[in-house]
Image 1: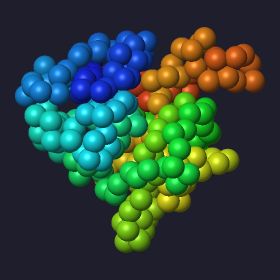
Image 2: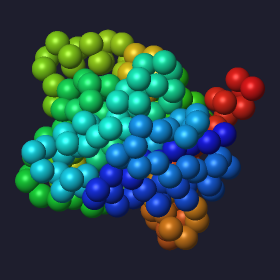
Image 3: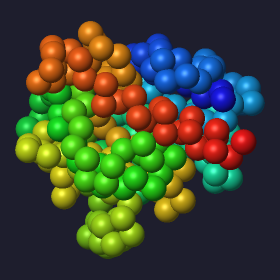
Length: 232
């Protein structure tokens, strides 16, 4: 299976996403924001960072990059797309997910190992989790406060489209503690925390077993790989 990782001007975590994909067992393919070529990949990761310096709004300029035309088209046909942090911001700006992400409520950049609850396991990137499982995923953002109108929020909650929810503390003022969403089809998932930073011992969050041993991010990538293995 080939999973593409798109690099935009200002991407910071594209290499981390590539490493996570390879650790999970798939082939990572580097893609460039200015191209109209997805190179035959089976899934896409929009990585974290500060695309175009977050000028205008976080993710707003990147959403109009040439390659995003292809991403939107293929997502509409069912291709799995994972947006992480800045990638989540791109997904809402490209209208692949509803709502918007605003400056953190406390107006400060935040970095912490964040507890999440898995709310939806019926997506391309969450099938290897258990319903209501609590996981620890690193979080780092300045514009992570998820907001939407009351009607949209009711729809998201009613249709089970909240994929992840913050537990213990709401770090950025997101409505209903929302940390991540899925589209109706389950092939597009966006979240603010960074699963690519929790895929191998020695580099992840601390756990009761050992420092930096957390690997709760790995199932994001093995889930999508398994989906294609089953289809094959």
